[in-house]
Length: 104
Image (cartoon, rainbow, N blue to C red; front, side, top):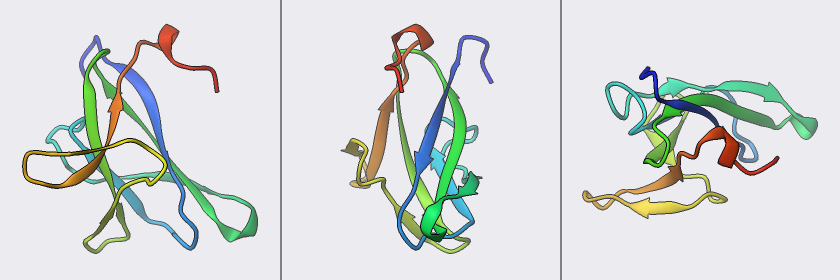
């Protein structure tokens, strides 16, 4: 992790999705290496998945979720997306300094 990077939490939930869920993106080293997300149960036997990632302020990262250990990749339908140079749709997040992040 670089010293000038900042943390942010990526979260994901989708009905009927059970662990494990992985997140991969341009933020990891090497890029697009799946990282298992933390999870906790919610009401109605649903899960919320989270992972803290790091990036440089002002940069945009792309990411995607892998459901289970297979090859099912999905985007968060509630987060912004972008199409990369290879034609893949990915979620996109601009890393902002902690004092500029919106209040929860």
